[in-house]
Length: 225
Image (cartoon, rainbow, N blue to C red):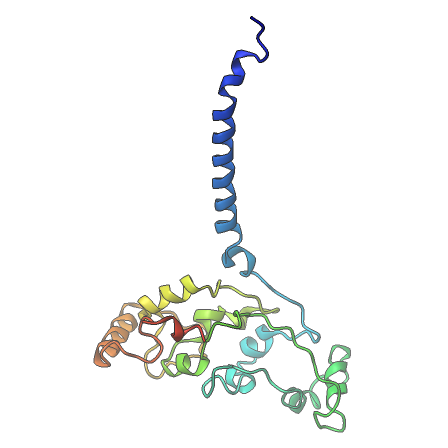
């Protein structure tokens, strides 16, 4: 009797099956771990057409976020400042600075009728996801809860994944992020303590746990529109 294959080949199908299963598990792990927003989005830090230091403006100079992001308390979008808002200061301050040449080009004769500045958006949500800034700021959720300590950033970067799981984690217990009355959402160095968390819980209970947009969503359409 002629033996065509060595005896060890009898184990080959089982080895291949185990190898395929292990490869599948590895692929699932790599995709779920490394493809998550914690790794693909957190740390995103694009350069802007004009170098703008939040560390200088919001930090050292103490400018309120709402001076530039003026609609953050009124609508779904925080909005970015128009060129004329920036030029209002920089027609007098560093008015000959070379990095501000694009700003001067955008404001011909003091009016924003030149070439627009193409700012690069840092915090991107899918088009099907709905987020309303005004509802959150009115509930006194601070800017830093989502955007981090922007007042310490030379170049703004994304510090949170902004994923659905991350949002739901906050909605299940928003009390560490709800600030006491009198503490502006734009105060960047505020941190929760036991007293503020207890006060937030009482505030939620007083409203029947139905604080606008902060109670856990009961339907997909609350965020997906």
